[in-house]
Length: 564
Image 1 (spheres, helix red, strand yellow):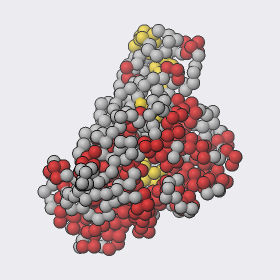
Image 2 (cartoon, rainbow, N blue to C red):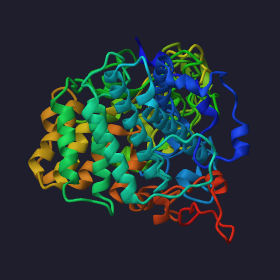
Image 3 (cartoon, one colour):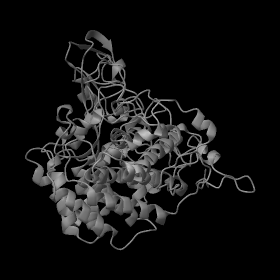
Image 4 (tube, helix red, strand yellow):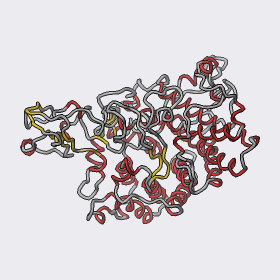
């Protein structure tokens, strides 16, 4: 059975209307009734399985959505804002990012729904009849990982939150913020316990397995190692877990970097954990409150405005360009600056557009080396060389050449990792591609980071070189290897950007390392004057502040983060 078809984004039992921590009565009454099935349904064998499947659906609020992308790629060193779209306060770090921004509340509410579903499964499992103890143990292990993963993302985005580890059955204003130590302890406990009871593989692709939980816990230990809660063995534990994922299972790097994201190769050997999507519009809903624009829609946000240029019109192949994110100069010229040996610039960004609207004597726009162009169908219409080609050289070309000095918020190198050519028409927004939350190249780079920090420079170098050799052009793989002297923390910072650009890791990486402010000041001129250490945390949603109990002075007991 394909697991993606049994994950239902709507909660199928009455508990959906009772969630969640600190929700006001008016909010609860506004919940849409999605089923007449009572809460007791969860206590049946079918209800128990449906409940577990439902616990996965909150992942779709964060992964492969504009919300998740905004909170993980905006406001970093490698991506800037495009011409269109909102939520730019997450990039500018200005007053546009405030507690009333709906994305903040949406993530908060949907993750707590997922958490409470996990809590219900764990609490009720002992009393569910008709389900074997082995299956119960397995499903509890799955949801313990999910609960910990939801809490880990909330913790990194907002700081200490309300750590609820039992089922919430009714609205309550009794809420508090747990400490960093309490957050780490609960997350590590859940993930450790899940690893013990999870299988190495699963017959239902997409379910949590032991290597997924090991990689998730490795990320937690890496993060903790840089925090105020760090322990002397955090890096060592992270390295051991990464080594498990690499050596104990059947994962293997794809031979070609481009093949990782090939639409015909979705379930490839490099994918450790995929968040599943489908062409089924009902199953694809990303969350209960906003079913519009569901599915994996990352294909929308990295595209430049190719469709109004000479010889071009919008089509399914080249995508619907929302122009939300464009690579920074640092990204294109430094991170991806070396292209003789490294294939990842060419295989990450689209550089050639073929005419799908042929015509004669069409006016040029951005290429000042010519005034008109003429195209037959399939001719090159736009080329992005990635360097400052001279006007004289551009004049020899029969197409428009977009050089770095002409990049703008509308015209820029376009990330191709998430292109979705399976959409039914050129305006269709929901995508059906799975999103790779964890993949093996990330595991190798995490291993290198942990080993370098633990003083094992040779081992760190070896891990990096495995990723770099794969990225080399044919005949250039030896030249891609670095020496131990080149294995520095800064090299790993940039190597992760080269390998994982756009994959919803960058903000969390910079926040983990503690260099977010420094990187933004250096490479994000739109935010350099605004960002402060306060921006290492997002604002607590105003809805949560309002829902919480008040002290004698009428102030919410759920404290807002500093600076907001």
